[in-house]
Image (tube, rainbow, N blue to C red; front, side, top):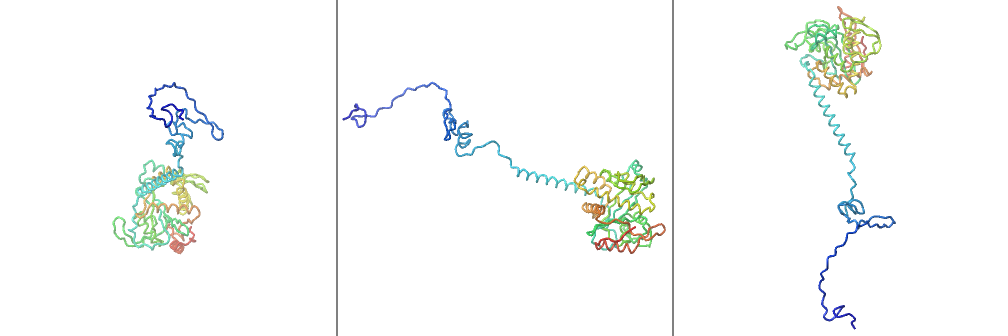
Length: 411
């Protein structure tokens, strides 16, 4: 029995599906929604966000789980972001180191070519004839000339140089840079030597030997550096590899650019001709004082021999101060030093800036005790000229040629 009215229920006869009813739209009054607060599994309250209209993954980012709801700003599956990524300091340090190295190399290379271009390569050793064989050491003939080139009348007066024309050798020394130790040998300008046959540096004419014996500095006055080298080689038997000459102005300029050179002067002395006036003890010499110090000869009993010892002492101190990291790595000292010295430095055509650096470091080694400084051994005099001790000179030259420790002593 069917208790349902006709048309209702299941299986009624004549039952037809009821048509869709048209429902009136019901306008609901807006009610402020409060966040629906729930509790997690640990009993901690949290805001579900449902009643605020915030949906997981919505741009507002207020849902549970951080920015943008679960999974970050893009929705599920994307990692959350928390501001800018941490800097890669290892990469920055590597890039910074490369930049510094490139900058240092650029400055160093630029400095090298700048300084190399300032060197005056005016001496042609290819013009020197009948040369001795090369030895195991590198030898330099270092000359201090009385050249007044580029000096004003006021500078000549200040430096007590006089106003003589031309130039002469004021000091000469051989520097032998050897593996066994470096040796600096002063050649007194009053040395008695023979002028050998030679080819004129300007004329190209061959001048035969005439057996003329003169003071060593006369060779320079007669035909310049090439004849001086030829005369030194002929009278010593030692081959000269490089030549370096500096005038008064350049010498004083280098000293001043270094801020002076410290010297320990054992005994006070004066010399009106050179302008020297020194007290005993440690003191820093400026360019003017340094020039007076190395030129003084009349204040000493030994005259030229005592003067050459002072020249050696000062040049070693100068090299010791110039060839230091404090000068080489300091552009405020390096550039003025190179600029003041290289403009007046005359060298041979084959001498490089590297060779010049080796020369200074060899001189510095001598001042540090790694070598010997001496005068050429003297056996007597002839007509006021100093005669070399031939046997000692031969032994000295052999030791240098064979890179042996020098045991010969000088005056």
